[in-house]
Image 1 (cartoon, rainbow, N blue to C red):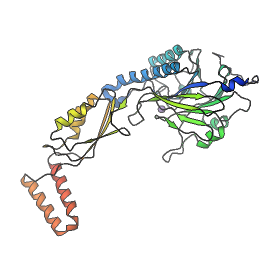
Image 2 (cartoon, rainbow, N blue to C red; image 1 turned 90 degrees about the vertical axis):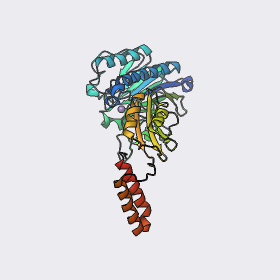
Image 3 (cartoon, rainbow, N blue to C red; image 1 turned 180 degrees about the vertical axis):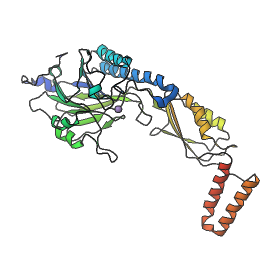
Length: 380
Ligand SMILES: [Mn+2]
């Protein structure tokens, strides 16, 4: 036994009335992926590893500031079972310093049989649950059903409200809900049938609600960016439980990586029509970027510059100014008139073809434009 947790499943004394009015505040996080290499970020990788570490610290700072009673980490705290000693000690240090009761389950990246927390001595306030287990937290008048990755066969029977159990009953799970043709390892009806007060999910990297029936259920998302196309900035959840009301959930941003200002759904649409050269487009875009910017830029409008727009050169110039950059070329190239003898022949062929089949005239005109564009070094 450690901290104020009781592992026994014995009879609890009758619950005094006041406990029904008591509040349990939980800090819910998952998918921290400490120790991830971030190879796709190139030279920005090690700075991003530190960003992930800062976000993990912020989870506990927020938990303390908001007077949480419990921290739940729903799997993938570590990116792999082989993360360096440094990351294991870092995580243990943050958890221990917080003094907050913290429950950690393995995820698919840090599975139970090789989890870094296995077979080492843990701080008194840290509970590591490598198997399905029901933890009674008597001091908090709560119990937590831990459903780690690797023990899926035992999840469903464990997901139920104990009639004689604590007033607040919660589950902690790592796995996917059905989505996009994938049937998922967790079924939404298990959540509704559980009659639990809250289910804390890990695995998906953006916060998402899966409330079913009376059971409030959320993916917390990752506290910092793991891959560029997730909701940014990374967040944690503050969950407030006051039996018998429904749990209230507040997402709190804790990450630093963010989409550029003005980007709807993470994509910044940028009209190129008013630019006459690449240099001025470059400097306007660069002014929007910061080292922690995730820039997915869709170029729109008609390019009327003197030279074809070279997307690869644009990308290479902007990438060092931000964390991650993607440029989508959704603009139309300029209207080009033929200059060289070869371009004149191309234009003539297109005109003749258009004259023969007037219905397709527009198509031949576009083909001619594209041909000249590509001949001059333009890219699609
Ligand atoms: Mn993950």
